[in-house]
Amino acid sequence: MKTISLKNIWTLVLSLIAAFPLLPKVVESILMIVFFILSIILYFKRDKGILKHNNNLKDILLLSSLFVIYLLSSLYSDNYVESLRFIILAAPILMFPLCLGFFYDTEISSKQFRRIKIVYITSLFLSLLITHFHLSYTVTDTISNWNYRNLFEDYTRVHGTYYSLWIGFGILILINEIFKKKRSNRIFYYLPFLVLIGYFFYWQITIAARLPLFITSILGMLYIVKQLKKTHRLLIISLFGFACVFYIFLKFDSIKSKIKFDLPEGKYALQHKDMTSEEIRTGIYYCSTSLIKNSLLFGYGVGDVNDQLNICYKQKIKSDVYQLFHYNSHNQYFQVFLAAGLFGILFFFFNIFNIFNISIRNKDELFIMFNLLLFTGFLTENILSRHDGVIFYSYFVNLFYFQKRKR
Image (cartoon, rainbow, N blue to C red; front, side):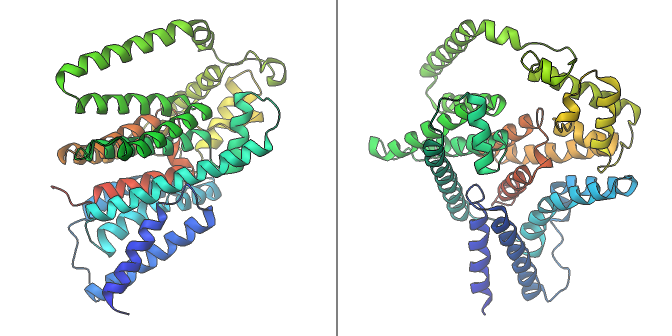
């Protein structure tokens, strides 16, 4: 087989991975394994097994920092099984920079990336459409929004917040594409984009993961305003601000009732109607910050973080909600701090600062929005503690990073 043919297969597999919203996890894993093997074969065909191209080694280390953090912190974890689970889970964070920046050191062309974005948007749309039809036929009675979200998660096997992040990025891709194609003013050209954006927003609202919806709306609005003439910007900003104030006014009592930052108390079976998610998060962050203070420099090791949190929940919070349900730190930054201490979080911050700096330096607006969407999402979820978050982050951040770029 000629090298060029192998390269085409490599490119095809890379593009197919973008269909992860539609693919079963087994298929995702097979595609990534095949992609990894093809990358190694291409490396040996090109370099005859000799390490010659090492210009990207620094980039690879930075892009795979979370994997490195988990690996090193596992050395002083007592729970080896949990440590191994996290290391395996984080493997794509190491695999993608190795494949794109070392084994087959190539820059992703604009044409390739556009094809990948088409695959991603198409798979996202088909996945939502299939789920929509399924739920339409299976849900015959009126149910609450929360129960509908649970049915959505059961069918897709993806946590609602993660799916909402996927959808949010899809919306930002479509908005970006609309303004990149200014050559056409025909409504039939823009109509499919607008219909998809509307359908994606419908699902974000239905899933009701608040932060992804809020960040997507803000980023999308700011991007649109930036593209408009200066005379129109003030009008759009004023209308958007008025809409936000009006919404807060209508929902003020509901919003006020949710703002509770006391630690939860009592048995969940008796108190669940009055116990808010904000109170539960307060308990999570209380234990997370307490544990960070007790092991500031090196943390507890990635395998022991959840064990330590569970001990804190049981000892310091007078509610059984944390024994009935599993709660991690619900903050990616806290998770890294708890796993590897001050040294680990500083290394992680250095990594994401470097990635964000690249996106700004290249004036890549979509990459900037992707970073803001993810790095803000890190504030309320351990996005990189689930397979769905790991593949989303590691796949796209490396594609953006290894595009044809100014370094």
